Image (cartoon, rainbow, N blue to C red; front, side, top):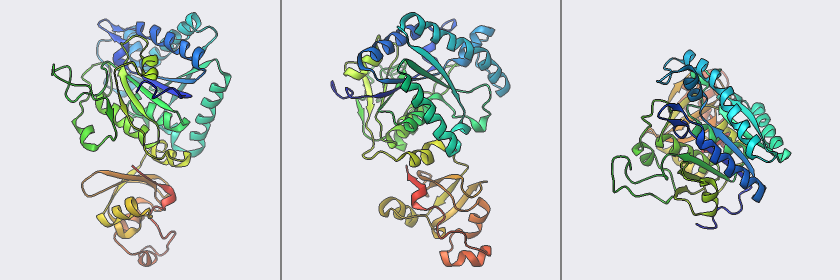
Length: 375
């Protein structure tokens, strides 16, 4: 493992709320060590580094004297608005003090920003231009002040994975308050052992993970595993490591830090496929039968109406949907050629029967294989 990450050119580091919260509320002292580590890596290895940072709500809670995370969306948005400016001020002050000419750049995103192909490309171009400056470290956070529930990523682990996939990063490091993934919860089991490597994030592994219990945080190990699955499917390895350890990012890169490494998929996705899989938010789900699943997974076929068992949600033609098998497992994601109403009408039918049922046949396929990504 000592030389596993010596050739990283673009690195994404995610730091969560738990690491930025102390007994008295928001505690940004850990950021000082992180910034020093990033500055040193930029100077030594000339790599592109992007930070996905939580903490806006926590900063706002601290400034407003709040002890519990806001429950209602308007209160959460208002608290984030107070906290985001303070959070970025801390980052900018730290880079000004230790950066030797490095600057922080704020980038706030909602799920809508990745939904449309043009917006997806625009964000990627902006981040690449920031990297081209050479002396800028983008700091990304979800735009909690404007994102409604349906436009939220849900947690910054997922945001970090989707951004990493979007920009073609070489490595995603998710900093937690533990050394990585354990075979048991280390907080309640003294004999818990660190899992050094996970080749594949299975549904069973995700379901066994626990959510966070912290009042100021969103997510937990469950969301980190989901993020690892997304990133690995896009073709980049992911690491979970302990952000409380000194120089942990450098330690991950040189292989000296305790960590869990999630192996990357055998083949990385083209950027358009990454947008379908991780950029465009699904608007519904389609349950498929075993024959259709086999055709998609093992034969590289398109999805036909005959293989559709059930349609869930309300979506228009051209929108993204999840494809699930009979057991409820996500198999793929793709862009549907038919609306939910039309698809409900033609489910189970042969292609030649579509025109008779709808009075037209726009496409032979429900989802063409070029617009479909296996998960």
